[in-house]
Structures are given as C-alpha cells and as structure tokens.
Image 1 (spheres, chains in turn red, green):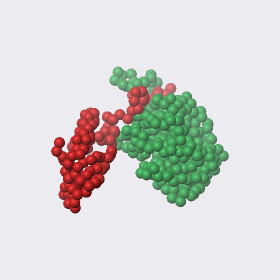
Image 2 (spheres, each protein chain N blue to C red):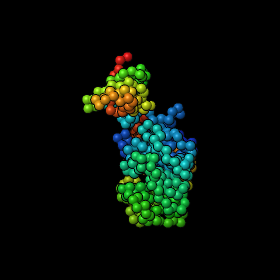
Image 3 (cartoon, helix red, strand yellow):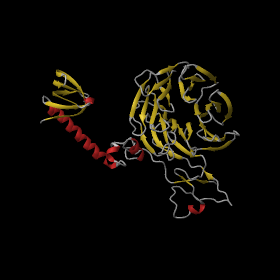
Image 4 (spheres, rainbow over the protein chains, first blue to last red):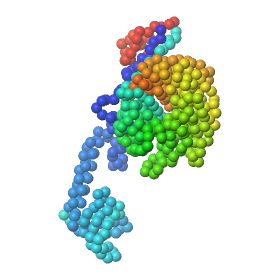
Length: 128
Length: 331
C-alpha cells in the first residue's frame, strides 16, 4: 500500500470578509509604492500607509482652502524662465490645470482677462 | 527499500460554481501565480505553488469563461457572459478597463509585452485591443462561422490561433489579417495550449490529445484517452503531459512513448481545465465541482505545501505534517 504524501497544511481560502489583495504583502508594497521613494530614502514602511494618507489629505485640504482665500486678491506668480507676473486671482478649474485671473501685469502690458496654465507656475504667493 | 508515494492533491476552495478556465503567470520575483475563471462570476488569484488565495476580482455580472495573467502577473484579463472583457491590476485587484462586446466573451490573451489583448467569443469575431489606447476601436478578424472558444497569440505575437464551435482551428497573420491555415475536425475542439518554447500546440477533441507544430500546423502525434478529454497540458520539459475530462480523473502520460503512466481520482465532477505550472513542478486542474486542485509532478517531493517525510519521521513527535497516515514499509 502506498503512503500518501504529507502536506504542511491546506491552501488558504478566501477570508470571507474582503476581496483580498493585502496591501501589506511584499509584492503589493514593492509594486504599488504610496510614498515618493526619494523622500523616504530606503525602504517603504508599510505600516505608515495610513498615517501618510492622513497627512496627504491634510495637505490637500490646506491647498484648497488657500485657493478659496486667494479669491479676489492680488497674487504674485513665479513662472519658468525667471518670469514673475502679478494678477487678481479669480478661480481655478476643477483639476487645477488653469487659473482664471484679471488685470494680469506682464512685461508686455496689462491683460484684462487671462488664463494662466498651472503647469507653467513654479510657485505663487499672496498676502492674507 | 523503496517507498512508493501516493499523490495527495491540494484542494483550493472558494469558488461556488464550476471552474471553467485557469492560467498561470510566468515566474516572477514573488513566485508564480494562478488565476481561475468561474461560473460564479468571481475570478480568483492564487499563489501558484501553494494555492493560497490572494484576492478575488470583483466586477463581472455574469459567469467568467476565460481568465489570463500576463507574464509578470501584474495584469489580469477576464472574459465573461456579461458581454465584457475586463483588464485588472493583478497586484491591487482593481478593475482597470472594461471592453464592451456584443455577445458573451469566451477567451482573453495578452501579448508577451502585455500591450495588446486578444478577445474572442460568441459573436464569432476576434478582436485585438491596444491597451495603451483603449478607447480606439479594436482590430477585428472575421471568418469563424460559430462561437470562438479559445484564441491565443503565437509565433512571437505575429500570428493568432483560434478554435471555434465550427470545428475548425484557424491560424491568422496578425498584420495582414489573413487566414494562413485552417484545420478541420470531426468534432469541436475542447481546448488549446500553446508552448512557445518549441512552438507546440496541444489540442484536445473527443478522447484525443493532439500535438501540432504551431508554425505550420502540422500534426506531430495523437494520443487517445479512456474518456472524453476537456483539457490537456504539456510539461515544460516535454517529457509528460496531463489530461482531464468527463470521467473526473487526471491522466499523466509519457510524451515520447504515449504510454499512460498514472491516473488520479480526486475531483467530484468533470475536469474542465488543466495546466502545468511554469516550473513544471505541479499542475492545476479546475472542475465542475467548483474546486481547483494542485497535483505534484514528482510525487513525494518536497515542494510548496507538500513535504517529503521519511518513515522514521512519521512516528516521531517532531513532524509538523498535517496528514501522516501509518506507513507500510517494503524492504
């Protein structure tokens, strides 16, 4: 009579509560980094994912509140090619791709109404 | 003495309806993976060498007829009765793309670079989707006169092989869209497997497992089994092949001599699909009984969850084996 091959355990089945794809598995952590590798230096600490998400949410909210606070105010924009312009900020589009501004002061004169492309900006500042 | 070992299949549970298709990924830095298509509409991803469940791809609204993984196991694709094919991120489980079709989709297959997806189904048309431009219309290949069951890329993704209910297998040129060759059979082909290394095509129909040269579609050899076969797979080293079908058993044959070496009972329903793992150490079968089973190629070898236990160890207290029946040792 043949001896059946021994097994360590049975294959694990679905856990019944989630759809799986554990974000803490080595493969997930390696292939779906949630941090910018340059800012963390070496290895991603998987346990910090929740904390990082919280911080990211906070930063995002702060940025959006800044846009609200900027409305109607004079804003200095630092653009590429060492260009600086000033304008009255009107609004941003939903994807933060363009800013609607008035009385844009440019080296070539004042533009009554203009759209500034956000990708052209390095930074912008205003007085609260 | 010699101690012959009896195969202990590993049962992967979780599906609630018949498992109709399965596919392995290539070998990745994290091992290899297995995807199963099920009539319950919930394809699952498993670790290939243990069968451990990793996740379930949720989104289809009907039976999933076909499932595949790319080589790196970073993408999955599924074909379903809800008239759609879906592409998934196989790491996060997220649905990435839904490709609407006009009828039940039966099969999906990635190119080697994972950039294109081939689909086929009941509307009899093969489609190639460019995954970098998913809104663009797919290229369409018409010719089959019945539902397409299986479609595969071959010859470095320059050609396509398709099998349909019209009892033909067609070889298409991807660029000219022309049919290069057609094979006709007495009965509908039940499965097709393409082995790039060696360019071999494994086809099953009736009780026959047939091996063809994939380039010229020329017959190499045929082997007849005791029962109607639904699927077969050739070992990467081309020394064995396995087959399963209507009688619920898995058969193992010597490829050179065509002799039946072993047969294994285990499933409680017809076997719909069987495939060797990329390292050839095991093969997986999917059945009408709703389970996947993993079988060892070399029975008794330590691999994955199987452990080679010597007779002395079986009676010691140190063994952590789950199952160790009393051994009968022959001198």
